[in-house]
Image 1 (cartoon, rainbow, N blue to C red):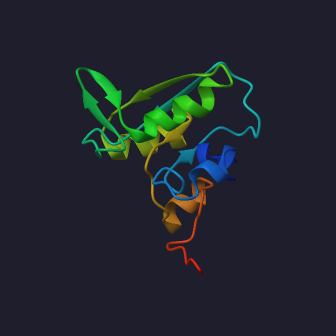
Image 2 (image 1 turned 45 degrees about the horizontal axis):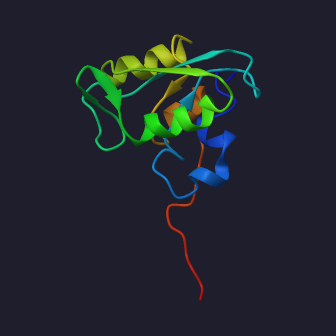
Length: 126
């Protein structure tokens, strides 16, 4: 049974369709609606600027800004840690984190998580 049922991008699909975070979050939380006042996320400790990085002892970046913008409106406090990537994924799977940021799709991850999938390219017709 999969741990994840909803991704941060799934909560605001329209806002994320053209963003890096859209297809890049793993969630382990089993609820479709948030019933918590806090959310724990992790990103790759090596950093992935401009999406996630540490500066002055604080985790910053686009992914963090988007999470805060979405969940802040709901009164949810978001904390982001930056352990090594393998630990981030394993700890998300174990339920110690709710979201693993910037995670791309793989068949292995698809066995344990529900990932937001978006087209690799968008075709515009004028």
